[in-house]
Amino acid sequence: MKNISLFIVMALLFSCTPTEKETKAIDVISWENALKNDTSFLESIDIVPLETDNDILVKTPYLFQYIKAIDAFLLMDSRQIVYVFDGNGKHRSNSSSCIGEGPKEYSMAVDAEYNPYTNSIELYNVAGKGSIHCYDLHFHWKQTIKLNQEAGFTAGGKCERTHAGS
Image (cartoon, rainbow, N blue to C red; front, side):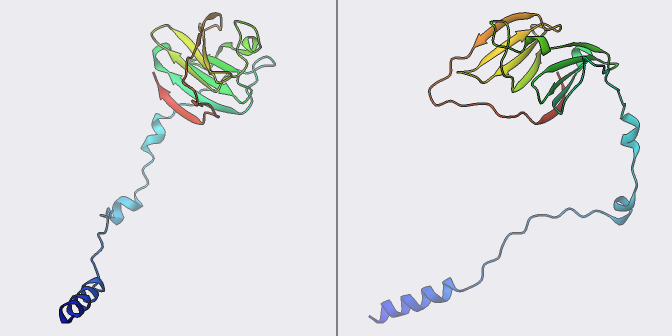
């Protein structure tokens, strides 16, 4: 009994001792660097106005890509219309005539991407089990790829990204 009491007292003493917490390293910045007004990055920014007219009106863009391989801008707006502008901002084409229920049309697009291997624009449609609609750079239909997804697979949603690449 004496041993059990001693064990309980020892356990209580050791459980009540404070433990040291690890602190994450904090970066220290000198005052000189913090006060430095470095605007050199502004020299690398170019403003490219995109061409607009009555037939080319972009409504709330939510996808924007610069495609270096073809020197073009790819833009998708909230109406799911995809626009292609050249590197100087001149309108090349858009997918407004491709929206619909026909075999060469898409009813919904949640993402658009340039495929450098086929030199085409691919639009991801989440309707049904999903499909990818492929068009050339002037939005002439090339093919539609039906996705064969397992049961319970869901995808989609509004794509909110901006990136440069390809």
